[in-house]
Image 1 (cartoon, rainbow, N blue to C red):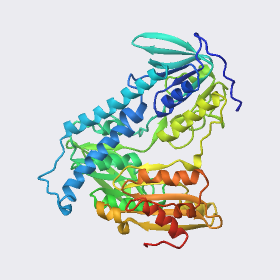
Image 2: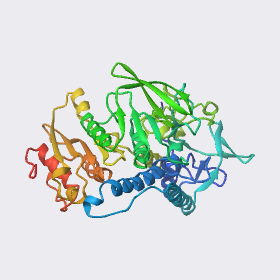
Image 3: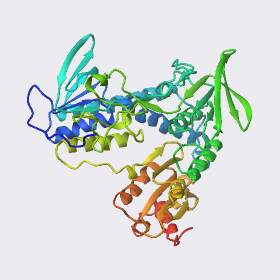
Image 4: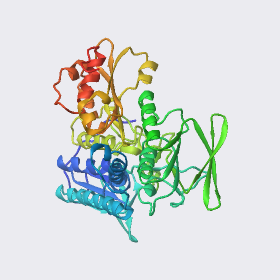
Length: 476
């Protein structure tokens, strides 16, 4: 597969240097960076509100609901012990959803303004290839054709549907539906114990729904460190979620106006009753309608767009990034890939370090990590030191009433290079970038330990865990 990047040439009025198909975090960021570098750019999306799944129905609206309902949970369960008396806190679903929608509108409008600011042609419609050098965009019964020197496929992903449990948007739903339910269900079964399932399960549990999570694997959050995942499971159970791991979902049927969900667990057949089933078993690359055959673009065995090291497909001037290619389906991963493609097209050295891409589960407490898990290091035969520090003895965590969880630092036994950092705790998502920065520059546990951290703060726990890996923790 070719990896030589076509040399950019002077822009012309009739030909774009780059046409980006998809205006999610990967696509619109790629378009902006390419425009900054002097390329003539168009960005196409089938939705008038640019921002993709992340801004419209994913990352942003879900976090609006998570943050709001976390405050509700605190008001119900913890304000009194802090000396704050709140009479009968309860959700106002209409206002909560309106606030979420307003946040989405603000951010998607902002992306459109960025398109204008950077002189990018914003085009709304469904794009499909008609040849390797031309696409057709259709909207409202009208079509237009665009030619370009380079194309970037950034069309994202869609929820996976179980073949025997079709989405209807009301009783059997996916994440897009879960952020916009018109009323609070009494009972919800979540199939899948990954980030999306746990986050949406948490949202509705805090508003009064009885939530049951069924995870097929032996632990929640597949790919996460097992000790951290098990710690998160214990906390979520304390918050009221019912969780079954190593549970095999076998079917669902409607009985007496409700859904009976069947599953096998610990060798026994079990059932749960639900008003709503949230299916959260993963996402698949979204390439429908692109007519990639006309461009000659190949897919891999999992229907992802096949790319080489510089994000080129087998057609040298057609690139792909984000959820449609191999790798974690994360908005920030797509953003970095978009920047890399734009810089490569401009003759620069675009690059993404896939060993240092953070992952976050935005429950309360949050679970965040970057780098290797203990299981991965053991499987690879890498000798390592481990340092842990519990938030129970962190001054700021005590003051905040956020003492659940701990930090784990994994460092190479000989070189002390940081190999992985895992955080289960409040604001873990805001602490993990420190670890990612250290790892990006091949830093050590000693580097973290020698860096002065403000006191009292939650990130002091990261420093203490690094010191523990060196067997010299102060407060443990």
